[in-house]
Length: 167
Image 1 (cartoon, one colour):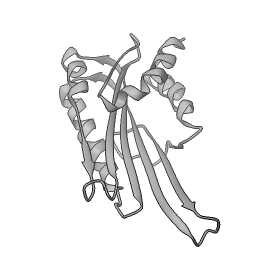
Image 2 (cartoon, one colour; image 1 turned 90 degrees about the horizontal axis):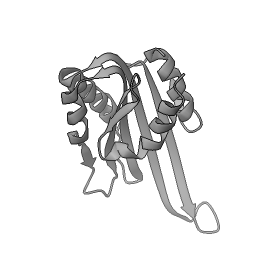
Image 3 (cartoon, one colour; image 1 turned 60 degrees about the vertical axis):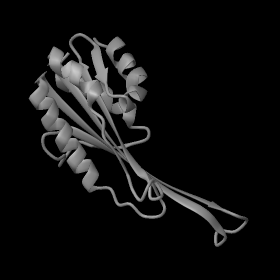
Image 4 (tube, one colour; image 1 turned 135 degrees about the horizontal axis):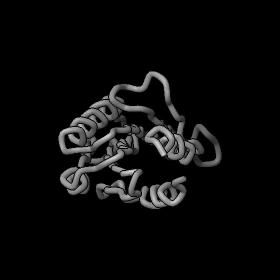
C-alpha cells in the first residue's frame, strides 16, 4: 500500500466530525481537517444566556518517505505555526487544538524516540480565555508501528484500526 492509499484510509475516519480539506492545503501538508463547535447554555429563554463556548480543532496530515529528526522538527514547527495563527482567544473561547498526523514509509529510531518528547501547550489569560493542546502521531505504514506524544495517545485506537486494515 502506498502513502497516498494509507492516507485515503485515514481520512474517512475523521470525515464524520471534521471538514476534510484536500485542495489548497498549506505546504508541506497533504490534507487538513477542521472542526468547529459553538455551545450555548441558557435558562428558559435564549436571552437569559448562562454561558457560551467555542471549540476548534485543526488537523494537518503529512506524508513523507522517511521521517528523520530534521523532517519531524520542520513538520512540527509548521503545524504549530499554521494552527496557532488561527487561534482567536476571547472570553467564550474554550479551546483550539492542533494535531499533526504524519504517515511515513520509514521512521528513523531517533525520530521515533523524539515524538513522545514533543510537548506544546498554551493557555490564554490563565485559562480564562481557553487553551491550545498539541497532538502528534507518527505512523509507519509499512510496519504498522506508531509513536505518539502524550496528547496524541487519544488516537491510538484509530491508528490500531488502520494498521489492522492494511491490504
